[in-house]
Image (cartoon, rainbow, N blue to C red):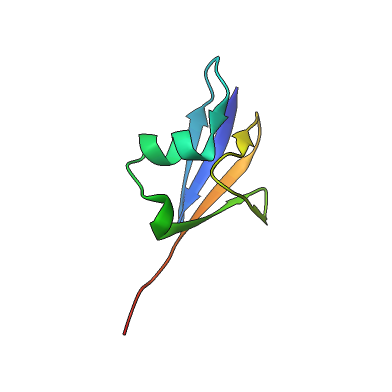
Length: 67
């Protein structure tokens, strides 16, 4: 079972494995802080506890800080 991860213009297929994978698990795997991105699942903004399912598209949108 797979899902897609989109970061900027890059899209990558990822395997789900046998366990329930959450957005938090994915961010940890990619070494990305949850405070530095907004996460969308199938077009809707979601929280870290959201479970990823087969066929989902996860989009990570980097937050830009400035002054």
